Amino acid sequence: MTRRLPDEAPAEFLTRVLPGPADLAEAAAREVADTASAAVTDRGRFCIALAGGSTPRALYERLAKSHFRKGIPWTRSLFFWGDERCVSPRSPRSNYRMARESLLAPLRIPPAQVFRMRGEIDPGRAAHLYRDVLAKEFGPGPPVLDLVLLGVGPDGHTASLFPETRALSEDRRAAVENWVPKLREWRLTLTYPAINAARRVLFLVSGSEKAEVVARILKKERGYRRLPAAGVRAMSVLWMLDEEAGALL
Image 1 (spheres, rainbow, N blue to C red):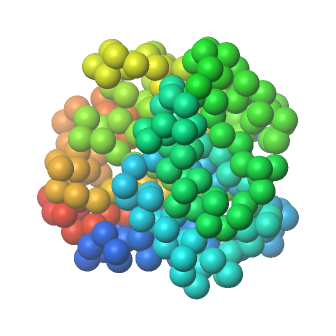
Image 2: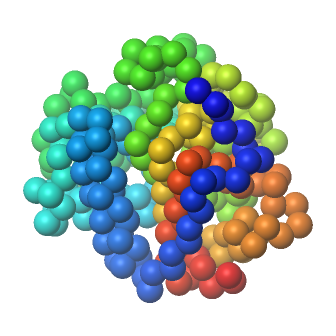
């Protein structure tokens, strides 16, 4: 398998700007539904890496409570995570807890289809165990997920790939523990080799506080390559923004 490096252009790179957060959630839900249906038709299962944050939560609630609930092959869907805080799965800060409450529990997804990062144990051990999980499900080499959901922070971080952190230089392992000095905490995260091996990456970004960093990345302004989100170069990358996040494009 040819590894797609961060400085290579994706095969498909698209941007969509939606009027508001509700429109963004609806359009994103349709993207998930279409990707899931195609994956199950082509390969018999749909493998998605979930993201944390308020924008993905709105997507999950839309998927669980609307017509998408019956229109997506959930019984053939496997759920992974792009990153996790090193906290208990019961913590309000847990990405797993948020996804469980807004998506997995309402859909009654069985535990056998859920592959969470174990944020409650030693970070190094948790990262090692997650690499084992990915290897078991996808075989050797980078895992080929059908869809990876991502956001972007005002500092340009995505997943838990933060500026000037060690995980940015990882070029082999699919998941690692990552110390984030400015937060003074460990995170667990997928790395570029895993994210860039995905068949499709969907960035979900809303809010005016994201407008500057979105413009820097998408307009390739000076220094944009130092922003971690700019290193995402999967086969197909779609940035979905609300009008506030896309205001400077």
